Length: 242
Ligand SMILES: *[C@@H]1O[C@H](CO)[C@@H](O)[C@H](O)[C@H]1NC(C)=O
Image (tube, rainbow, N blue to C red; front, side):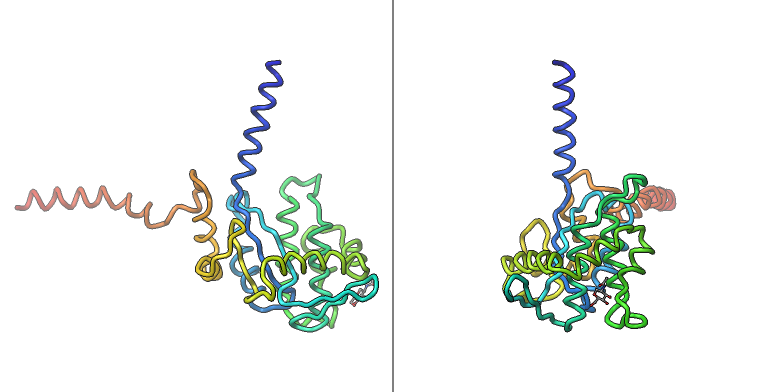
């Protein structure tokens, strides 16, 4: 009985800790330069420390694409052309297929997905030797399921997964007004979006509940505190002089 109570308490603590993560939804496109800038320059660098424990990212790689059903399959037209449709399918498949590496605790599903997506976005629109960088990015980021991801992206499975991303995007906004769009806690706010594109870290920190991680403490508050003894000493010196 006592053990059960303790077990339930542990479960509750686990649930409340998990609930603390800030849900962030990123609507983006695989070959979109602004999406690449957000993911590679703003999000990826910020989520290297403890902050990554405080965020739950939902990746939605569809953007301003359009889709229509063609018999049993789904056809897409994409903002930056057919290569982007293929890229979006690779992203959709990767998000679905990548799992935590059970041998290495630091490789969580979330961090592997973020690293892989960041690598793909970094390459930009011009693939080296005209080869989609999937295999290369998988190799460089500890993803051992590239074969499955590629098979998925090249089949109707990839179309179905991208269709799901399309449905999510259309349910949110049809058509999407700006790519990328960043949504915190499922509520879109244009001011927050503009702020997040400039300073993702401060925006995210604003949504994290107390006690906030150290990295969210403003640098000048620490500087301000260390300033107080100097101020005291200065005041004392002045009082001695007069
Ligand atoms: C999958 O599709 C891409 C893009 O069309 C192509 O370059 C690649 O060779 C295909 N891979 C397989 C295993 O069919």
